[in-house]
Length: 287
Image (cartoon, rainbow, N blue to C red; front, top):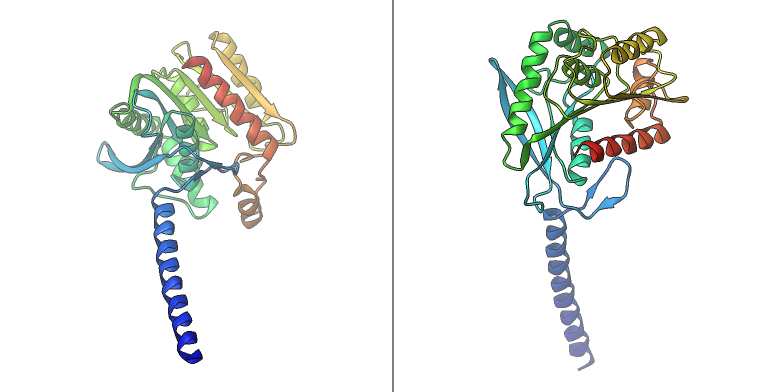
């Protein structure tokens, strides 16, 4: 009788364990379907962000982008283009698009190289970025194609558009602003300011440049020339230099990439967070 009781208790235990496992499996599936979004700065966000990969054409080239937005917001929202570093359209630019979507914007991480091409080595990155910046008409066509794709998104208010960029992408958005693109705001981070098209009175956007004061890729002479040119056309801009920050200070991959390729790159948490706050302030002002 005791043996039968033990068998019975073991059977109950097995059944209970099986039910518990099924319940745990169901809960895990629900978490996977509805994950919390975590920003590069850490800290889970309860806002559900939807990210979608999209393709659009620039001339005969297929460009591969990523658009992020909060589907819970029903009214149309300002749209923001995010232009990648010289490495190409990668996860970092998508993370920034997600962060902007968390703030209530619709953000499109663009592709300036075509087919989502990414560089694995600085030599390739230099070639890819140089091919774009040395042919400004190609750069403008690709930027305009992304702008058209963003404006056509049903969640976007086409009358409220901004653009931000990092490194190469910063130079792109500043150049586009100088050429008179119809943008409300432009922000550039660790960006060169010796541009293929320097500031003109065609500028419509309010502009923010956030660079590292110790960035060896941005010479003092280029900063002086840029700010003088901006002042000469009465541009609405702010240039901020963060003490001790070097190139790529907003990217957490900068440390490893700097060591791998022996480049003066480094993440700077304080400068990263301060510059993001400056961007938020800029967007609040124009939108």
